[in-house]
Every structure is written in structure tokens, then in C-alpha cells.
Length: 203
Image (cartoon, rainbow, N blue to C red; front, side, top):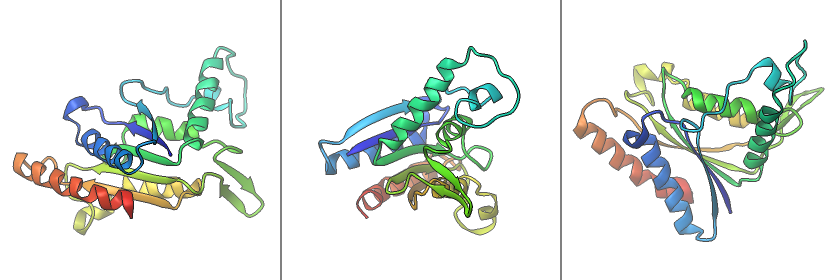
């Protein structure tokens, strides 16, 4: 089994999503000791956001562009190939301003490549990346999974929609909420989330 493990939190060792992501990967490896893991820290080794010139490497973009972006075109190819070579993708995804962190969005924009991860047809776009599993370590400072805050959750809904667009319907979330509501609640929330990991991995 090939696992792609991504972190996107800007909080370093204090990050709850990093801790939760590690627990997910460790549980996967316990179940499949021969699994290979490719790790990317999207915050520490930031992927430049798309520009017209970079997007021209895999999209039809009008206008003229500089020719000194060959390295970025190669990076785009590497990222999508790495994604498509993986059977399980584990993503540390903290909620940032009701959505995902900017480093994760930069990665997403690189792997959404026509002809590689999806294609256009007369009936509409079709995902080409089906058959994979995505497990998201989802962390939030507040409470958004139900009640009044649910309407502001553009984090998990966005990730489900995006991977669904690529043809991946098996998207699972291991969630820790209320992490900014004091040390005791944070500890309880993380303990509850860690307890969810085995079920998310083996279900």
C-alpha cells in the first residue's frame, strides 16, 4: 500500500491536525507494515500558488507567459503523479477562516489537472482518480459539525466536493473540535478524536 501523508498546519509542533494525522498514518502502518509512506509538509515546503504561467503547464490559459517556469511545470507533474500513485491520502487539515489552509489549497490546485485527475466530456467533467481513499485529520477551534456553526463549515464540505470531483467517493474525517475552548476541552477533544482513528482506518 502506498500512503501519501500531507500536513498543512502553520502551527508546527503545537498543531492538533499534525498529531491526529500521525495517529492515522501509524494506525495504517500497524495494519499494513509493508506500506510505503510519502510525506509532504505543505507549510514548511510551500508550493507556490498558481499563476497564469504555472497553470499553462497543464491547462489551456490564454496569453503569453514567461519561459522560466519549467521547474514549476515539473513540480505540477510530480505532485499529480505522486497523488495518483497513492492508494490512501492522509491530510492534516485545520479549519482556517471556515475553510482550509492556504498551503493545502495550493496543493489542490496543482493536482486538479485535466486529463490526469479528471477529464471533460460532452456530459460534463468525469473524475479519473477513483478507487482511492482519503482520510482527513480535521481540526477546528470552534464547533461546526452541527448546530448554528454548521453553515460556516466550508472545510469538510469543500474537501468532500473536491475529491468527489476527482472521482474519489471514499472520503473520511477524523474530527477534533472546540480546540480553542481551553486546555481541558482541547485535551478531551483530542482524546475523542484519537479514539475515532481505528474505526476510520478499518471501516
